[in-house]
Image (cartoon, rainbow, N blue to C red; front, top):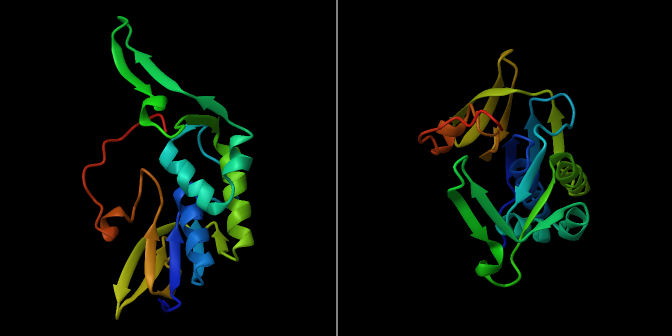
Length: 181
């Protein structure tokens, strides 16, 4: 099936934004990623990459490079202060060689940015998008300053836990803040 070439805006340069932008660009779409930070820098320290995330990294072609910088995790066993189990996840029980991978966020971001650049994604650093309006089937993104950028067929909202655009994507729901990341 030959799909039409779309002009796509991706808002957010965490992990989901660059991954989505890369995959969409590789499909032949014109992709512009908007990020509020003025430069590429990871927020947060380490995190645990789950098997589902590894599927995406494999599709991007960067899984082996990322795992070379990661620590393999076979099991998570979390206890409360009284020694009672809060979580006991044995990845091996998921089958097919499943495991988690602990790594530093900047390592993953480095490979995602490199991948996105290779795919020809245009990145606009220092663009904090506060609003998006859809008129006549096209999206226009707006900054606090009033400056906008329009003509997008599709809007991908990947601006994180404190998203200003989540409701526009129809994914509002309840946001229970997690103050540590």
